[in-house]
Image 1 (tube, one colour):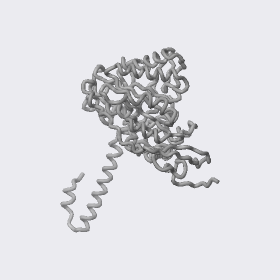
Image 2 (cartoon, rainbow, N blue to C red):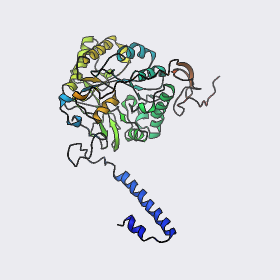
Image 3 (cartoon, rainbow, N blue to C red):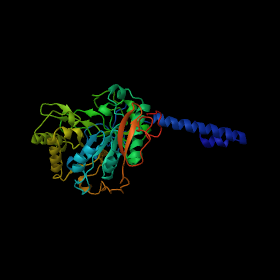
Image 4 (cartoon, one colour):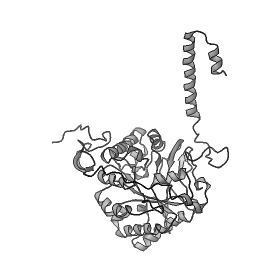
Length: 413
């Protein structure tokens, strides 16, 4: 081994100085590359987020898979967080009939409005109403442009294809819905069909923080997994392969913890749970699943649906609102977005200090007061589409490889 001072002390001529400086710069670059490669966690290592000095995973940047409460807090000091999410396009129907009626006026124990997370896909999406959801303090997340029905398409998607689908959507939401790019932190794969490591490679490359596409079963109350990072290979079961097997430091997995019926039927999206028509029975079913978390380790409670679940049976919407009314009677329950959940996990804070943890949302100025209704052509199939935007209408319907709709390539008479 040699030191820089030893090397430079032996240098005499200007030419040699330059040559040695270049050599040292090369060594430095190679060293940094080695640190980047070999300093990253080995996915084969066991994740350890204990209090021991040898632990290889520490908050706020890393957390292991499992049911342990972040920060080692006693369960009585943990706020029960509830995650309300909705998949697919925001439309005038679901906005006016459901979202606006139930999500805009409710408050958490700290006096701040509740917040839901919307996994938006592009086709038929109303960007003016998506903007209004954001303005009201709800989170906008990514659910792809095409929402193509073939599972093989998603399972085998390359990083490039995923970028076109999800980053293209992020660009569309930013352009036509005026959603700030840095506010869109997460994603959910259509049909919960991830592409294995490619999904998290795309996220890492493009600074997406979290994914919520991975179902998990939970038989034992109190053993419910909390969200965790993929610094190490995940031990979570893989019901919808392929699942990631590599190391992706700092990327968070928000497990889609299954609900369970009385006869042990499991469902990660409430839409797929056993059919119940009676409103009181629906409410009981919801509460039973909530209390598996609330009376257990208080892992965030997932209530993941499509708005069509309400449309199919009005009793469901009534039960949903009655459940939210019930939550409002519990002083230790907070209805928050997925990103807010991760904010708490990264900085575990006891209930006694929660009043100022999540700052109340200040509704920004409405810059989308006069939306444009656009009649456009979807170029890949020549079909007409209607699109409500916050800005001028594009030339053609935005799509893969053309998120701004500014590159028409086909002429229609």
